[in-house]
Length: 488
Ligand code: CS2
Image 1 (cartoon, rainbow, N blue to C red):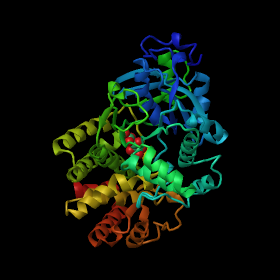
Image 2: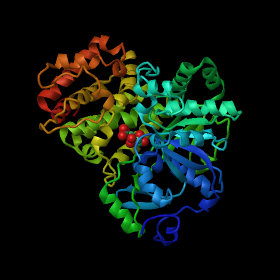
Image 3: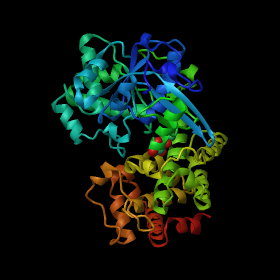
């Protein structure tokens, strides 16, 4: 038997279920990018609001690409299990906030209709870094991106997130409806501001009028989101079926820790998420820097190091004394770049160590390594730039970049194939052959990636020399030996 509305009453009693009448819920949110992260984070916070009686904030979710999530969840009436795990402890909960799942490429019109419905007051996004079609080096729209080109030529049947948002904003304007507030939940620097900039630029390519409307009427609060969500495995599904007494085609896994900090700018209203533990603040940036630079920066470092060294999960990597010591040194360097009080940042890193040590998560380094070229600028390079400008120590940050470069070469230290999953990087024609080129040639080639390094870093002689030195050491000795010799 499958999890669904009619079978909810058959659930094992230990499993928490939606404590409200789902049939009485009406939609108020459209979510773009219905992946595991949103289901384990944002949707669970909204589910709590629905359970408290805020019935007009149901979620219409859309996938901008694949039908997989819809195919898994539609036969379950949108229900799915959220499993929160920490070492030996496991909590299960069925989330009921998702009312419908659309697959944008199958029927773009239907998604536009939903987005144009005045009942929709918020659009949330988890479309990953590359979904913003932004050049992270400059913050400008990637006008040459094929989806952007397509959406300018065919605004009525868009493909990109920006294409859907702008067309819907335009339709709402034509009908005299207020725009929705757009809440980015991706790990981008100043995600709301970054989004707003490319939205206005994209709208301007359609008409100056539309750009002015977006500029004056559309709010894009920034937010910081945090919960570690490893990809679901077949073993996870079997465990959930056992615990539920019902099949769930796609449960999501996460850690109990969950944080969401949001700038409180919602001119069209919002649910009382603060009652679900969300923090509303005037300025998200201190939190975002803390999270991107301390968590995501070390995550991406662990991903590159772990893959080179054959360490499969974050827990396995952080359990290695050399890697652990390196990560602690990394934090010591990154903390002075934050505006937050150091005591708070130190408490956060202590908590991070415990989160990384969580052996129940099995968070794979290969999962985090995905799309690395889109992640490094805000996670590592931004903090590095601050350190260089203030002459602060930053060796571990440079080393992490060297490890990433080496991990792009396609082979682990033991010579095993290291498949890349980073389409933007793979589309780059300047990739050197790391087996044939000298360290200097490899580093010079990578530094020409301005979307990662900007125009400034390739000219910073001390940085370039350090990067070459670390890269050469990793290539010669292997990443763990290189760490042990320098950061032990
Ligand atoms: C990770 C993040 O895959 C990745 O790049 O660094 O998904 C990370 O787990 C989350 O941002 C934690 O909130």
